[in-house]
Image (tube, rainbow, N blue to C red; front, side):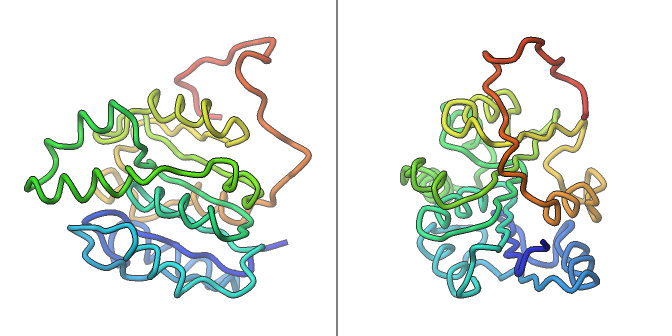
Length: 219
């Protein structure tokens, strides 16, 4: 069954017109899947509560078959949204996460102390992992091997610690999934949005695998 709605959230310092967002909207429209990429307020100086309010205003009333997707900082907003909303799937592209490595690295990319404080506080609100697991059928995480902002190993560890059922997709040399790295179109992302959820297939913890898979391979 196709999603009844896709809520596509853009990144910090970005807009609905940037990167792959116009393409994904066009492709979903061709498949007759409603999609909205709202303009999130104060994109350069983001406040979580404002982003969540905007996201909630665009969410359909019956969201149990809805896919919410985010890129970078908006992935945290997507996770926070899932604390309160029943969702079919989250697709998180290069997710910003409250880890020590991210906190250490991100300050050099901020243009002011105020911007750093806002971004830091955005992901410093805590997360009810149990509620997210109860509310979402599947979480898909897409990571790049050479993302300048999001350390792949660090992100994988976060999901291994908190969301073992999440399915992690590694993509080689995708940068931060932006136009600079060729992501004006993103077919793999489209496939993940429309892919049916198999509730009988759950990813096992790595410790339970009989054979460990190599790190730098796209499957």
